[in-house]
Image (cartoon, rainbow, N blue to C red):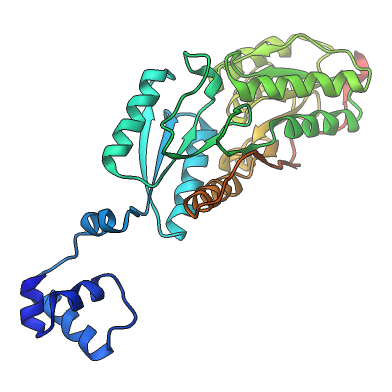
Length: 332
């Protein structure tokens, strides 16, 4: 900085003001300082400036791996919203949901200097009764099952599942079968609970739940079982990747979609419109979730007390995989 000041013929304080974007610096002086910076190859030390301001313009994210569709798309949306607000994102992925791992991630983020942390994980999976986080850290949690002093943002899992079931019943199906996600998953549990509740509210038979692990392979195995169920005319699948496996299983078994069985998924992944047939599914607005997370972070950093849960509505996207019951339904 002293070298730049000598080259430009100004004080070090003026160089500092130019580096920090001070609008009060006369334009001709600013240009002389910028020219001197270019000539000397000087770049302001952003870390030092951040320490001085106490503002790092960075948001830490702790998440359980990067294989889950919801986690990846939430992270992508959050990073985009953060960038538009002038913040960078520092990611710490965990391989297991333990208290020690979470505490270690917070320690690491503290060393990397972030202003706040977004926790993208189902906190009930932690191996302790309660989640304890550093009291001085601004935190936002993406998990609508979370409770406590931190603001929570998530999509409305129950609303989406109910919409899927009601759509299939509205098409004329007597009941709806369900392929759920893993038992330990909060999202899978809420979707299954809403599926069952929607059927009971309409006085319909509740078939036995089949379970998968979110993968197309597990959906394929479940689909082969349902292909042999003569009374099955409609299936609500807990995510689109399993639904893809179901579609292949039905195809391999000679079961037509939607002529014999209607299929509805959940997530609305980008490929869902290219399935054969294009998949009717529940759209999760991950962009809105990311924007609300960043909004909550910025409000906390501004000194506001932010609490409570904000649920983002889902939307049923109707394509070609669901229709009124066909010959199979009449036979049953």
